[in-house]
Image 1 (cartoon, rainbow, N blue to C red):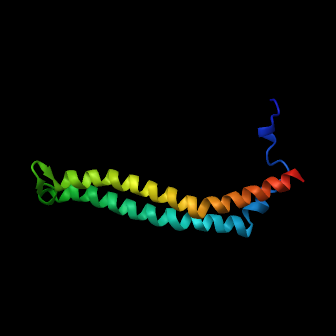
Image 2 (image 1 turned 30 degrees about the vertical axis):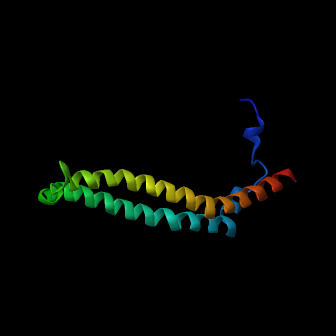
Length: 114
């Protein structure tokens, strides 16, 4: 196996210590404060759609416009909500997560250079 600069990255860093650091704990807390609630909300929305499709045939077949019914509308909203969650996460990450992660990375790179 050859040794490349990429494989040597972090060789002088105590990753266990970094994982236990206050900065990294705060980064994990910030990440989880968005991801877990959003995952729960999306799963509830998804399972509500599946249950409605399975048990509420009359409701899902209500015509909204022409042959376009509530079932199709809610199905399309599943895609829209997925893209909305993605956009919200990117925005949240850019504002809250990335600055903290960059600070940690910069500090670790400085330690490694010493």
